[in-house]
Image (tube, rainbow, N blue to C red):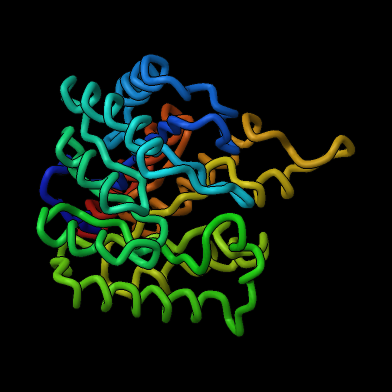
Length: 286
């Protein structure tokens, strides 16, 4: 199994681990625990020390129902965090749908753009990425967070997501993005029901067949809380990390290029165990 290397990113022969730093007061996963620059920087450094290959910095919550923040506020949140982490030698990606925020983050030292809208929210963003020649995560997306759960109609969710992702990749390539720099993400939880998320995870091979490297972001999402519910209700976010690590094993075994997670240590261990087992299997087969 091969894991393509991309410019500015670590060359590793296994599934990569992307650690999440939400510089927001309203994230679903951490409740604003890292909403100021100092705590976000400290958290990013801790995630890198725990084994993250990439730290993904975002200044705008994309949880279901979230309202957008202004471009100025988003940049204010992320610029010092990106600059400090990059200055410390950490590989940083910027999680944004705005070209202006991506430009500021790239100037501050980010080396990857993670666009949950797949280029749909801001048509200038694919053009910026094309000019910068950096890796670009194109996620499946149908609407902004405040409206996205009104757009969950699919004939066959896996086929439809694959078709829509293929269209998005074609569009960003037409805008000038080098196809060899594109990474795709099925957007678990974005305009998806829990059943849709499980169907996509069960058929990761269909997503891999699209061609570009695959990033999977299942970490702490509500479909895991529903699965693990008890008489008190859905499992709280912080109690979903073991299930997240289990899905990391699933993704790594399938051949995903990377996983995006909040609690790095167990997931970093998981991808290394999978890589060692795959190497042993390959050696035995030869």
